[in-house]
Amino acid sequence: MPLLQLCDSNFPSGAFSHSFGFETYISNEKINNYETFRDALCVYIQTQLTYTDGLACRLTYDFLEEKSKEDVWRLNEMLAALCLARETREGTRMIGERMWKICREIYRFDIWNDDKKKRGYMHPALVFAIFCYHLEIPKDTTVLSYLYTSVQALVQNAVRGIPLGQTDGQRLLVSVQPHLIKAVQKIHTLTEEELGAVAPGLEIAQMQHEQLSVRLFMS
Amino acid sequence: MSWSGLLRCTAMEENGRTVISDCYYEGALKLTRPIYLHPSQPTIYLIHVGGGYVDGDRYKTEIMLQERAHLIATTQSATKIYKIVKMPVQQYTSFYLDDQSVLEFFPDPVIAYEKAQFYQETTVYMKESSTFIYGDIITPGWSESGELFRYDWIRSKLKIYYEGNLMLFDHLYLEPSKGITGILQMEGYTHFGSLFVISPFITKHILQKFEWMATRFPASAHLGWSTPMMPGLIVRVLAHETHVIETIFQMIHQFIREECFQEEPIFLRKY
Image (tube, rainbow over all chains, first blue to last red):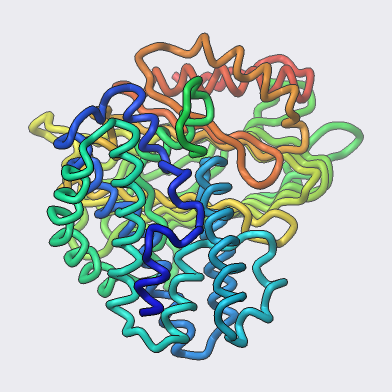
C-alpha cells in the first residue's frame, strides 16, 4: 500500500508540471500522434530512464543496503551536476524536494535528519529509493515502480499536450511494460561508471524549451 | 602501467605576460613552443607524434595555470582512433585553474575509425574567479566503405570541480550498433559539438547579448544552450559537418573574448 500511495498520480510531487523536453518535440511536431510519441518514449526509457534515473535509483538502494549513506549524497551531487539543461535540473530538484518533504512528514526514517547533506538539491530517484528501502520493498520492484511512475507522468502530459485520447494513454502504458521490464534487467547489469550517459537530442530539446514561447509545462 | 604519451605543462603570469614556466613530455605526446598570436597570451599546440591512437594506448595530459595566467590550447590535428583489438584507447586530461586564470581549449575533432573504442575523461579543477572555455567535436568517424558510425563506441566524460565541488558532469556515450541516429539521440545529424564556458564574466547581460547573437548561427545546425549551476554557458550543437560546428564555436569564442575580456579574436591557423 505505501508503494501504491507513492506511485499514485495524486501524490503531490509536482511531476505533472514537467515534460523534461517532450514539449519541445510536441511544439515542433516531431511528436504529433500516438506512434511518434510511443517511439520517443521507448528511446527515453532506453536512455535517460535507464542510465540516469533508473541507475540512480538502484545505486541508492545498493548504498543504503551497504550502509554507506555518504555515497548516497555523493550520488546526489553527481546527479545535480549531470543535468546540464537548467529547467530540467530545476524541475527534478523541485520534484525531489517535494517528495522528500512529504515523505518526511508521513514516515519516520533516520535519514531525514541528513537534511543539510542535500545541499539544495534532491533527485526524485533518490527519495524514491530511500522510501522503498526503508519500507522493505524489494530492489527490482523499487526500480520498476520508479520507472513506471516516470513514464506515467509523461504519458499523462502527452495526453494533454499532443493531445491523445485517455484510452490511448492507457494503451501506451500497457505497450511500454515490456520495455520497462527490459530496462530494469539492463539497469541490473550497469555500474556507476555508466551513470548519466546522455541522449544528445533530448538534452537539446530540454535546453530549447527555455526559449519556447507557448508552454504548458515548466520544463 | 606506463603511459603511451604523457604531457605536463605549467603556465604562469610574469609582468603581465603569460609564459610556459615548466614543461615535460614523453612518449607520443609533444608540445610546440608557445606561439604568441596575442602579445601576452600564448597559444600551445598539443601534438601526437604517432599520427593516431591505436589499441590499448593510454594518454595523460596535465595543464596547470597559475594565478592570472591566460593560455590558449589546441591540437595540431584531429584525434584519430584506429581499430581496437584488445583494449580501448584511454585519454585522461586534467586542467588546474588557479585564481583569475583563463584557459581557452579548442582541440580538433575526434575521428574514430571502424571498430574503434575510445574512452576520454577530462577533469577540471577551477577557482570561482577563473575562466574555462572548452569546445569539443565528435565526428561520425571514418571507414573504408565510406559508411558512417562504424566505430564500436565512444565514451566521453567531463567533470568540473568548482572550488572543490563537482558542479558539472557531462557524460556522452555513443554506441552506434545500439541505434543512435534517431529521435532524442542524434536526430538524423552526424556531428556533435559541445561548448562550455565557465566564467564569472558570464552575467545576465552577456547571456542576453548571446541570445541576440545566436539568431545569426548557421541555420543548418540544430542547437540548444543553457546555464549550469555556476556562472557560465553550455552550448550543444548537432550538425552534418564539422565546419558548421567550428563556425558556431568560433562565433561564440570571439563573442566571449570581446564581451568578457575586451580582446580581439584569435584564429588558430593550422593548415
